[in-house]
Image (cartoon, rainbow, N blue to C red):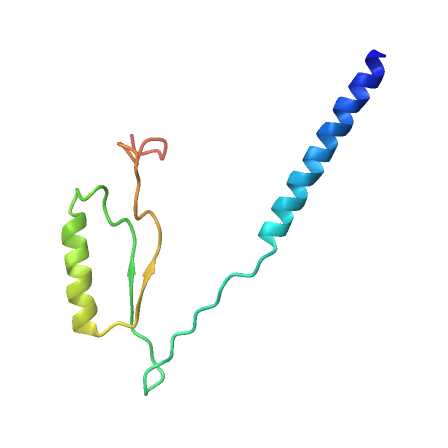
Length: 100
């Protein structure tokens, strides 16, 4: 009787595992949405690349945002490329990154 119960648990675990894998593989097979930015008359694009914007409004984050707006208007950019590390909700974002 004990072996039968173990087989049922194993079967239930396998069914759950298959359901999770099916769900994940279905979700990851979706295509990313494509955005097209028309070029200027001369065939060019102007964009600003920014990374590590600061954190929680501190460490010059507001000044970075102000300068982005100023430069964006001055250079008449078409879009902004964010390289990442934009927002961190932890108190010490550098902890665990070899900077502590």
